[in-house]
Structures are given as structure tokens and as C-alpha cells.
Image (tube, rainbow, N blue to C red):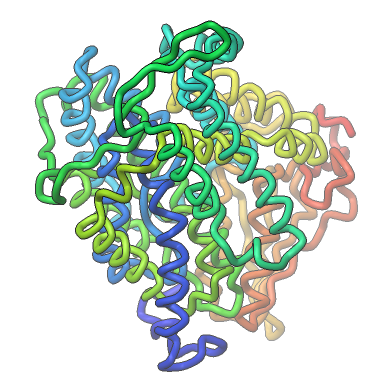
Length: 548
């Protein structure tokens, strides 16, 4: 997948040189979607609201020209909220402003790591993470977002900080809710779920960004409730207070928003922990998004993951140096970009340009947005990340996937993201060892190559699991020029779900590029569930412990 391919605007199906007109429209619509999300993600992360805008502007105006994922939108993402707010809280020691500057320092160091990853061609590491662990991580992030933002939506300040404690305090916040603020928040959430239901049926809802509909409702309500002026009101014999603190606050100009990092705590154990989390989790999320968008746009050239990781790292470096949030290729805005008819990388550029112009010339309009409406948008995102449907999907693939998924979620909520992801991976490795996979087989795939006039055959022996898949993928890349490649798994005793999924994705990708990849030798294997991509085991030579 070379990064030297010509721009999408000149490839088939993009509309030729006139593609920029489609990109202007798509960029504008994504800007309408991104504006409130950037503000909400920043505030939920413990950063100033404008920090989210700064990141999206950098992602649009700078990273656009460095990456190869032409149709992805780069900017702040809800998936990194838990890491960002943790960095601000722990590094600041109760001082939010200090924690913000020190969190910026960890982001800068993490960005340098991402650049190093790209130079070492580590983009392929996105294939190393088990699917169940990744989905468990995202579900835990979704629960964390909901736990934190539920109190903002209700207009109540919680008395605790931990995720589990915040969840336990939700009933108490419901009993103490601020009626005016909660009305804005609940209506915003209702509009989002209603819009999603209508969008599934097509029509106007599919073309209009849901956050725009929310703002059209929430901003007038904020004016009716006079949130710009501090005052009290009585409801059901109880006095409540409202005021400008329940609205978005921005500096008078963008130069006033620039904040420089404080590197004092970046090299402490706590600082290094967040450096690793920003670098690893941000990279994995971004790579997964790029791969997902590639699947959604099969007519476009495939993205060079290493080059895109470089663009993300450089963008994070600049964003961290001026006060922005961590940046990734973001899945919600990228999917919307495709739906709105984007043809090239210019759509990301125009989305960043519109954000810059709006914040520079109309900051007063942003100030009228109520925080409860932003909280509703974030809770909606969190619910989608932690959807029970993900648990159902895991169950269909196999009971072990449910175990790994739930274990990752539980440990992440009880500790932090890095420990949770590491624990999920360790559990999966432990299960493979219990199923008879040797330590050597875990890390090295035994592959024999046979070349003939009809193509190349790769015969795999022992085990094909997520920890040794990169060896198999390197062999496949080595023979990418061959018209036909077969992967023979006849002598493999265990093929895990991650490998089944990766081979399926590669088969589809090769087919789109006019090449042929076939997976053979699974006839004698037993599937652990009826799902076509579930783990397979070969009972010959002893039961490996996997039961249907």
C-alpha cells in the first residue's frame, strides 16, 4: 500500500477535478457536526473548550497534507476523554490549570513516540490487538463518558470522581437535578436518539447533522432561561441557581487560547504512564478508524497506515505545543464525511478551515451553547460505544470473547485504560496457553512457502493466533505481487477469532485490488460458535479445551 498513489480526486469514482465542490459541501457539513463535539470533548477532558477546536483546526489544515487516509477526519475523539481527564487530574494534584499544562506535555512526548512508531513502520501493530479487547476498551470508555456527563446533563456537581462512584451517584443527582438545565440536556439526548431512528429510514434526517438539530433547540432554550445572567428561580418549593457557568466560555481571540505545555511532570512515573496511554491508545484508535473507513470506501486507494500514523503524530505534536487535545482519525466524523459525499482529502481541510473562521469571527455564537446540550451529545456517543449490542456480538462469536470483553471493561473501570487493555491481552494469552498453544507458538508462526505456476501457498502449522499474526501478514505482503496466494491452515490446531477476522479483511481487500487470497484447510476444524469468523480448533491430537 504505497503512500505515493495519486490523490483521490483523480481516481475512479471521484468526479475528477471538480471533486473540490463536493469536498466544500462535505467539509461544511462535517464542520457543523464537529463544532459542538469538539467543545464537548474538550470540556469532558478537563481542557478549555477551545482546545478541541485548536486540535480540529490543526488536523484539518496541517495533517490533511501529511496522511494518506484521504477521507478520514482528524480531530479530538471521545475515546481519549478518559485518558485526558485522568492526566489533568493526576498531574495537576487538584489544580486544573496546572494539570492541563502538564497533560499537554505528556501529549507532546506521546506525539514524538507516534512519529517514531511511524518511522519504524509500526502501523501494522493495529493488527496485534485482539478484537474483543479493543471493543471492551471502547465500551469502558463509553461507560466512563456516561458516568461523568450524566451529572452535567442534570445540572448537578457530583461529590465524587471515580467512574464507579460517579455511576453510583447518578440516582442522587437525578433527585437533585436542576429543572431548567436538565430539560435542555434530556431534550438534547432525546433529539439525538430520535434523529438516529429517523436517519435509519433515510430522508432529510440522514443529510442533516444531528448536533445541528440539537443546537437549534438548545440555544433558544438557553436564551429563554436567560442563562447568560446569573439568577435564581423556584421550582416545586426549591430554589435553583443558573448562570453563564452553564454556557460554553471561549477566550476573546484565538491567540489568547494558545497555552504552552509544562514539562515538569512529564518524566515522572505518572507522566510516563499517560505518555504511553496517549501514544498507544490514540494510535490504535486512529489506525482502526482508518481501516474502517477504507472498508466503507472500497473504490478508493488503500491508506498507508504508517504514513497516516506520521500525520497523526505530527498533528499531535503541534496541537500539544499550542494547547490542543490529542488527535486521532475520528470514526463518527469520518463516517459522516463519506455519507456527505466527500471525494478527497480536501474535505478534511475545509472542515478545519470552517472551524478556524467560525471561532475567529463568531466566538459570541459559541458562548450561547449550553453545556447540558454538549453533555447530551457525549452521552449519546458513550451509549453507542458501550452498546449492549457489542456484548451480543461477542456472544455470537464465542463465550470466550464475552469473558475477555467483560474482563477488559471491568478492569478498565476499576483501574485505568492501560491496565485494562493489558489485562485483557494477558487473559487472552492465558486462555491460548490453557488450550494447548506453546509459548513458542504464541510468538512465532511456523510457515512453509511453496511457489508454483498457479501462485504461492503458505502452509501454517501449530497455532494461528493474534500474537503471531504479524509474521503471517509479513509473508503475505512479501507475495503481494503474486496474482494468487493461498493460506493453508490444515495443520493448525487453533485459529483464534482475531486471525479469522484479519484474514477475512485481507481477502476482501485483495479482491478489491484484483488479487486473490484464499484461506484453505478449515474443513476438519470445529467452530466454537455459528459465527463465520469465530475461533476454530482441530480436535485431532487431543482436545484443546474449546467447546462449542
